[in-house]
Length: 217
Ligand code: GRF
Image (cartoon, rainbow, N blue to C red; front, top):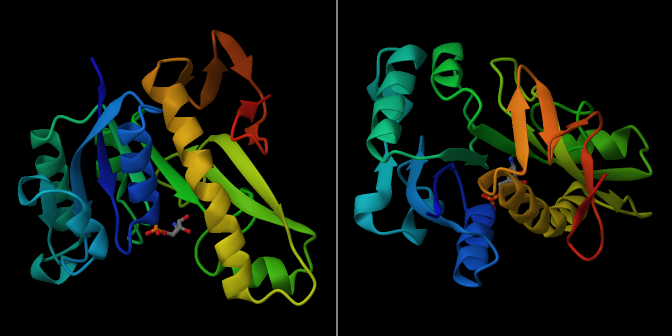
């Protein structure tokens, strides 16, 4: 039976679109059962039907815990196997993360552990890095700190602006996310207490995306 994926998104949803396209092309044995957002105006929400959307403004809740609890209850009602943060820009509290432990992943636009948090492209440029990229990782309460499953690299080019670099990274985020999800939904990759296994063998460093869109050790 195909895996049930819920996506958390705060913005345009190009990574969500990549998931939907991969499912339609039968590259991913899954279905997107819900899109949830902290931004009721997020265009990502429009990529699924009204019954598959949940969006609330955190301003309508007394605190982070209350917002998180409402979103967690909504998520559970969609019975997802996997929860994918794809451009979800709000920090998830520890209780939320614990509730979905082991089935919550995020795509982050940097070569983690470099540049956790915001403005990753500008920070890579400022540091004079020759390479930049994106990471898919399991979510833990500490921001962008969970075990990294896979990464994709891009060169930094002379004269790059943060926007140009962001575009180059986004182009590899989509195949990176699809290839990562394919390994997760098929059960080929497992995670326990921060230790990843691929096909039953420990994985000690992130898989790398090649130019054919395949993940390699
Ligand atoms: C992506 O760069 C993602 O890595 C970051 O936010 C951006 C979201 O883009 N966390 P989109 O909404 O998937 O188009």
